[in-house]
Image (cartoon, helix red, strand yellow):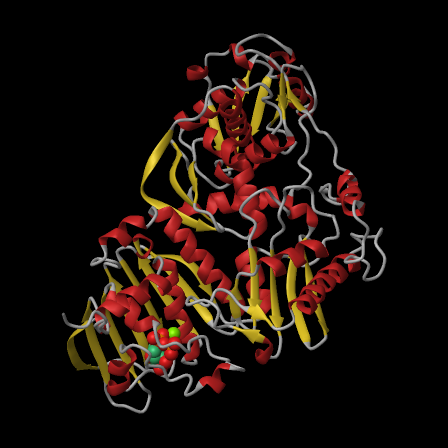
Length: 595
Ligand code: ADP
Ligand code: MG
């Protein structure tokens, strides 16, 4: 019998290694982006189709590779980043194992295109399932582009384990946003199926936090900045009232590495000193800088985990940094200086139970229960409305003469004079009531979009999107949560006037976020209770989708508008409290002519 032990051929070894490094498209993206960062790039473009299941490309403007290096890079354990074991201490680059490229190449069809700035031509290497098929000279700019098709095409068992496009894309977005937070000085672009999802210009940490998380310091987040025992912590934590049940984004960055670390996450939580309502998680992004010699990054092949030489110290540093920041905002008046870790059992719970500690405020004023009501005045019935309109409701609309004045007002004659209708406000009233009707009684019908749209929101906004999703759906929007901070819209209300590639939704969500004190509809009958949230959403929708001042209307459109206005429950007042129409009596006109 021959020997039983043999060395695995490289391609098999690579496929096994791939199992550790390459879990899903997001982990491939992470490895490729890390290489781009290590190469000194300041712009990185990521393009994926079908969440990277079909194709994934990372392009950078980094140092590039020579032809020889490009070929070598695909070999196992080929790295330019360390020479010996000592280099592992104090390591500043992301890579060091020399495993990512060969592992990824082993389970995909890869094209590696690269050029160093000094060379006159670049190199293209085509690899299929880890085997180099072709090497050629190409013309291109300095930097590197790696394109993958058919990830796991030769490992069907793995491919089968990939989740749906939504989930895989969520992982990609989470990965890229976290890495973008770690490197605000690098520009990141993410395109999905040809559409822009993220466009992050180079800038400061704060600017990026604003772009990615929608952070507004002082308003919904608090800046963290402190250093102690040779460790520096900076970033932001969400205010306690922005905490939520799910979907909170928690990003920890250690020496520019995005990591997961249970103990540190717990340290952040502890920094809130019991201010967080039970079961709710805060969003935050914290960057820790310490002497690289104090962190072991070689714990896991994907480098998502790190180990600290002095974990307790790091833990205390983080807790204190978060605590100080929150206390600085007077959010934790009850707690003494640095007393968090030493707080007696049970104290935290007590703070959390005080509802005032985290109750959101609206516009700085105590939140009012604002049950809005609209009058119950069934269509066609005679109420105060009809009398005031001068009997207009009794006129046959088809006969009424109407004129448009300065593309702004509609004039119509009524029995005892004339009314001038503000076309914009009137239409807002109609749309507003329709939206409320959809929320309460008859959900709107929607039309499917040919090309579903991916929309990314800031952390505060995405929270509102999730909160209002059930209402939006009743209004006729088809919205799916993509996780992270993105949603996909695949349907909109039928007949919607102003979708504008999603701008409408952004505007509405922004309005909700600003939580402006909307003018209440004067309380009348008690038939229907409208929650403040419903009122705000419906009025914002009406505002953004209504006919505008300056639009010319046909006679039919004007008649229809008047008809619909008088079919509403509150025809004389717009959703923001402005009058929809004024009446000019014949007697008033007579008077002025001194008749
Ligand atoms: P590691 O990053 O651990 O060194 P990789 O397999 O990820 O291993 O990459 C192998 C080598 O290929 C790197 O050390 C680097 O020299 C080179 N390389 C990979 N990607 C790029 C890139 N985008 N630009 C320049 N060089 C790169
Ligand atoms: Mg690498």
